[in-house]
Length: 615
Image 1 (cartoon, rainbow, N blue to C red):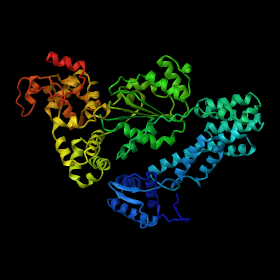
Image 2: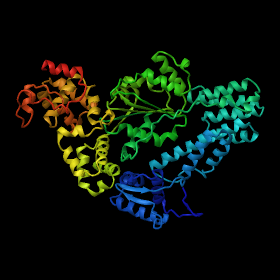
Image 3: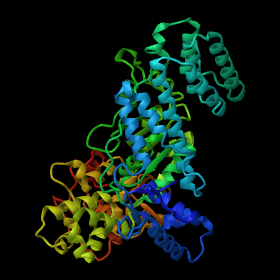
Image 4: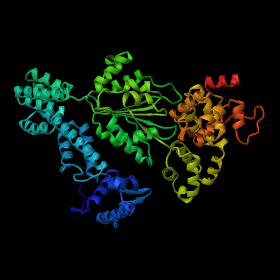
């Protein structure tokens, strides 16, 4: 890692300053928390004075970078931010050149050769820390992928003895990288060395079968068939074996002004690398999709064969997307025509696993409703990574398919305040007390925070204190936290989609808990919901799995304020047990009917029947 200024290489100091700079460069123009930097620099053995030592490293790095004349390394709560302009990192130049090469076949070889020249040796060589090691591995994989792309571009122009000479040591250094072996075969074939090309195939096939117990990939087999077919002049113009399948890039844009979640992003990266399938789980409006897309965009270079995305609609105003429909969309994106896509779900799933075998693909399965909706979409190859988001815990995927769960909780107060300050602007800086109160009244949920910020910016002449006072009234809170005409920008609508999926007893406990307004245990649940001990315990577990109840201590449960407001708006059971436990309320017939503006739209049939029968 080097920094150059006007042709002069800057002295960066010792290993800690260099590692600190690397971490800030890898997160350029984003705040990196002090806690994360300390963890990366010292790990579990961080001394008590680590925070002071970090400040010293920052000061030395500022001096090395000449920050006095050009403000670059900024202190931003809860850590530091390094400002980098477009094109200043050679990695940015690499990505720019690679992008142009994809659209300009005539210059692809030259562009990729220039991109590869940015490597002067192993990336981040000599730097310690988990993030640096992981990024070094990613950058090496990027280098190899660009090298293979450049060789493909050279082959399209015509194989040469120089290309054979270049590829022979590469396959020795990367003995199981099948694309390089296929390219060597094609280069030999293009130089009229058919026998040598066939010998190469036998060598790699023997290694794959002996060491891994697998047959060669489809690209190797295609190259083998081409060599067996004999000399083919067309090879020099457009070799069939190097024609690449479509590279889908279906990720939606990541959400702007993303704040915090550094621990969750790191955990998601570790889980995805170790397990292959990650389940991002959390309550409505907590930012699961934003987190998944943020990580997906940061990691997409690790998946050169593409990124697939589908919103499964498990919680929303419409019907959930059937697995077959999602598979049809994926297969089409991978280049299959409508006639080539099988009809039955099992056949579609099998064809999908065939198509993605050996490819380095990322699948983002957003808003899953249940494990069975996801199961047919799982690839059968460890080269693919799957990130699924859901309000449900998707325990079936964890238990049967080795998925690992990444829990997403409500934002820490500091991050919630930071998000409001970014969204609202100077008014937030002028009234920090109201901003803090606003964050808590929104239960530190990103969805609620963004809607509240929109309300504040839509009324620039209204003091933030007035919005805080309005949100402090529980009966008004849900009505204020919605954007008219957009069900996806409504806290109440979002919560209603979770509620409608609850089993009967769990829905009953949820309604009763909202009115009780206190923490729950199994005994209290039995009393307020009129259930038996076993049914009460099962209902609590179902609410926890649906992320509509938090475990605050062993055997004790609670819900955040917005969930409680929503539950209190639902028709209650009017059981004597519930009446006894509701504190400080004098009840008269009909007094507990919710105000019309609190009633969630479209109550389920189960709820209506419950109310009608007086259960």
